[in-house]
Image 1 (tube, one colour):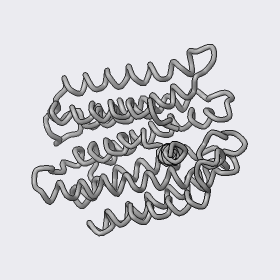
Image 2 (tube, rainbow, N blue to C red; image 1 turned 60 degrees about the horizontal axis):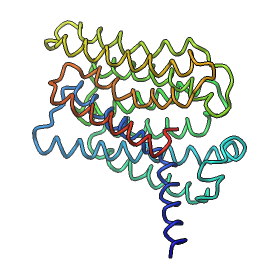
Image 3 (cartoon, rainbow, N blue to C red; image 1 turned 120 degrees about the horizontal axis):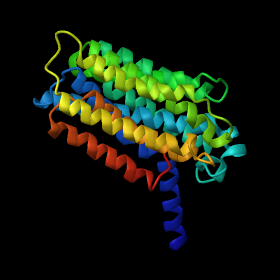
Length: 301
């Protein structure tokens, strides 16, 4: 019976690795931050139900993107990343294609019915995911597509929350997009090595600038500057700490930088939503802790 248990464990681990589930807390924090930036309510049961459908749909679309990423990258992984589930033989490429396609369909089904704007952004997000999975190993500007996917996730969350798109959410989405482009520039070198251009890393400072700009928008709500300053300091310290593993290390540790920056997406969301009460802010700390905990078990990339 032991080989059977080992086989089941191996299959489960392969699925978790394929889905890169350690990054799911960042997807959930994106949904929550965009919802809060849109002034979406979470008091009425109808609002809570919509948020659950949003989180479920975003989760499935993310998992679909990760599964299909490995399916498209099968040839590359057999040469450069033989530890990945498909080249290691833990799961077949056909199964990955099927699971990814089913998750994509279910993820769209969770949100397209809510309203027409949400349906539009959900379809755009699905298209962006497929576009990235198909092209990201062939073009040098693929980080822009990855950033576009997170941008569209913010807009999708806003559409589900209030049925339209608001300026604070657009600014937040731009900040997140810039962050992901800077992060992805380093992640591209994790498997193949080589020199990392330092200039895209400056995009990681964009959330700080836009968070302050959003707080200064005329006609907005009163800003809790103490919370915003705390969130900004926390964000900046974590980003600098993560970048040091690549730019100030004798042997660049791209994996540690990328893993840290991926978890840092939650801190970015906290920064953008820092004008909320501390009770809401604790949710972001919980999600950050989950991201770090999950990374100890499942690789983030």
